[in-house]
Amino acid sequence: MNNADRLQTVADRLRDKRRVTVLTGAGVSAASGVPTFRGPDGLWKKQRPETLATADAFRRDPRVVWEWYDWRRQVLSTKVPNRAHEVLAAWSERFPNFTLITQNVDGLHERAGTRNLIRFHGSIWEVLCWDRCANAPGRWWDDTVPFPQIPPSCPHCGGMLRPGVVWFGEPIDPDVIAKSTDALDCDVFFTVGTSAQVFPAAALAHEARHRGAFTVELNLESTPSSNAVDLSVQGPATDLLQTLEELLLGRP
Ligand code: OAD
Image (cartoon, rainbow, N blue to C red):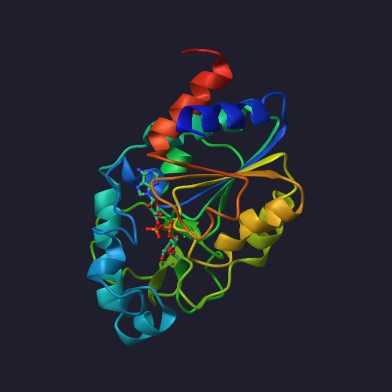
């Protein structure tokens, strides 16, 4: 089957369906100029995750960790959503029961106007008090770019803030897990632009299929998920989602 036939099969599967769930990863933001993690120019080629994205690293050197997140926030503030984000935002309005679970912390799905979004790994635009001081809310939005002082301080206790992202070794918020698990009961489950190497996110497609969903992977290259889904289509997320959207809307 070529890509055109594969996408036609997916479009046929989507027609008249109500429950659609999509899991996205860094590949969806690649066309916006946001670096992925594991590609040839990926962030983890230049830095080791354990030196920057763990609570231990933060404890050891909060300044270095915050400099990296502050730099990423500066880069992200210059980026805009691409066609892949836009198509998914349109689906979030069109399908009656649509959930987008994203591993991305970049905020681009939000900026595209996506409804019913679950931020599986948190958001780089949220912060929380490192000491979880009693006066501070659990987490809050702060899009200051760049921070005038690194590490930024908690406005409630004067201690340090930390980024509102999930670091390696940290559990996913139980509420996020519960909502994501509910969304696995769907008609069609997509996994888009993720290397399917980070758990528990990487297990979601498998579980959705187990529950009866038709599972589809859209990715630039094959991944450990490719053989575990019903249909895998290789290509840029922007092109594949745009073609699917045209098929769904009946336009060439
Ligand atoms: P990765 O960088 O691991 O994988 C990105 C995937 O997107 C790869 O399989 C690429 O082939 C694919 N890709 C690249 N460009 C693409 C494009 N234009 N269209 C479609 N696919 C494309 O990123 P994630 O799977 O998102 O965790 O990584 C998962 C987690 O690992 C991240 O959320 C992050 C990271 O450590 C945390 O920050 C907690």
